[in-house]
Image 1 (cartoon, one colour):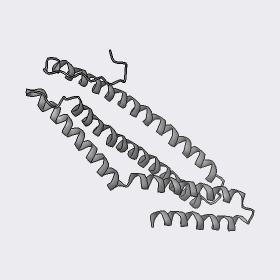
Image 2 (tube, rainbow, N blue to C red):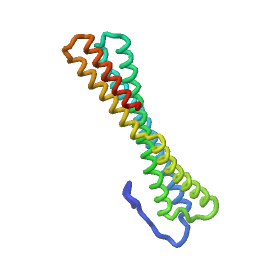
Image 3 (cartoon, one colour):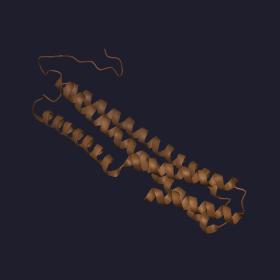
Length: 196
């Protein structure tokens, strides 16, 4: 008897256990899919809480700005960068996971010899192999086209730089007008460089 998580290979000259093997493989795929769906849901909830917390922390940095226009500009920009960094990080990890798991499934199916069946089961296995291969190709292509990792890091870097400038603003001992002008110049430069 195999230990949970352990792969056991059994070589047979006939296909007497083919249907039961396919059913067992299908059951494992369904269980894995359910676990993945649960983890995705938990991650979404955690991400939502994380974004909300980061926005609250960010608010503490800009709420001391007296000029309404500047404060609103920094709030809107900072929140936009926080949301986008989180979005692209999430997309990057989902596509990366698909790009890893789908080829592994193809390898397992082929290694287990499940692609050498007769009749309807053969077609189903071929469809699963083709779908996994297409998913792997799609995920890697989509990740490159979207530039997920690059955008995630750029947006994260930009919001962290804005936070840093807000901290400098809060401890600057110049007059309010000079502090505000310096803050606007620096934050706008950061955002221009990110857009550039």
